[in-house]
Image (cartoon, rainbow, N blue to C red):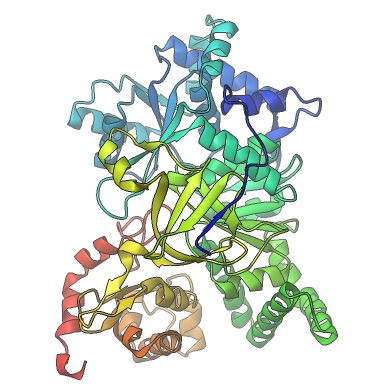
Length: 604
């Protein structure tokens, strides 16, 4: 199969936009809760659609009073919180264009985004963020950035009051002016290489895709469904899900600090969650380590194998009686505890941002949490494809959502077309022309398409390693397997134009103390000391040997180094969506890489 398309299920009127989604929900007799805000003592306070509509209208008036004109760009720099979505919709109601900025961005990154987009102002969360924005404005002479508003209650109230004299009719005129073809937001790619590019996403990209995704996922996203957002709203994945929930009347809560995620899950009790694969790896590994630390490791591993076996059998429609009974036993002993840790009501999880892996997908399905893996990019408003409860193949990223299409090019690159695809890169017609091939967007990913239209991702085109011997190696095939172990945090496979394949590995500092204790090593051993310890090296070598068994001899990792510090977003080696910045790693660890290839070259 080389091409597969799915017709749209919902035809959205051309002269409509994202703001109509809020108006539609507020007009319902049920007046659904679109958001929940943290209350006292672990409680949550619902924000009804009518309340949300009134508040975004008031804030939109404040923006108009401040001089914001239709089409003006306005930045948002904050952690994941209710006010992020509030001002996002207020910007749209004022007829303007929102420009997300990761709250971890440096002054130079902020300056680039505000300067390139020509933003007239920005919403920020704190004094620290305001200082960064003002520093960026001063350093780069960004005179067009005339406003910086904070998201605190007092500052937002001042903005509401400033717009009190603006007529409702003007805001109604502003919000209705945009059609599906008009620009809604410019989202800058997180930039694994080079300067971030501004992706122009339209009202149609969000509104049409949200309406069709809701129609394709009625069991997941519907009025009464609840989710808690902990991924950054500056990322397209979280942003799209937020709009999707407004479109279908589901309720969204937010938690800004992942350290509070477990208690927030337990108090809020969502029905579905969204996460990147690394989060699911962490949930699995932390559950396993907790069991091993309490002397119940054998029970957990037996339960995990049972969950995976049950899921695989269920996928083909035949679960043997003995396996059903075993599964029921482990549900009482193990599985329900994991579900309870996530609030007890979670039935579905939406995974994006990278491949999850078949084994983890079956594990979570086996414990009672169906992970719906999807695929997309910033340029495609997040999902091009997604698995649904009715149409799922674990280990794939699903089939195209209604209104989307996928094609596999001759070289294996995945091409996308449909309601999800951006209109282009802001101010860069040259890059836009490069990105499209006869109307199809070049994703840069390599994959396969089966007879039912399900996509399997095999790697990133730009990351394919070509060894000195001419062998093509897809690093993710090895990296994902090695990183899945609790001891390992990150793995970067190397070898482009080199005589053999090697790898850099980092240790998971959260899992390390328990691992050290179980292996009779001093609890106070640091990650840097552990990186040099023979027992740790032996454990990592075992993981690498197991991964090597899944590839050819020419693709196998021949040498590795455990580096003393982890690759993180703060260190500059991960994007905010936890993707490896491969070029940065190679640059910062050039000496170690050269040492690998200088050692015993003849043996290779």
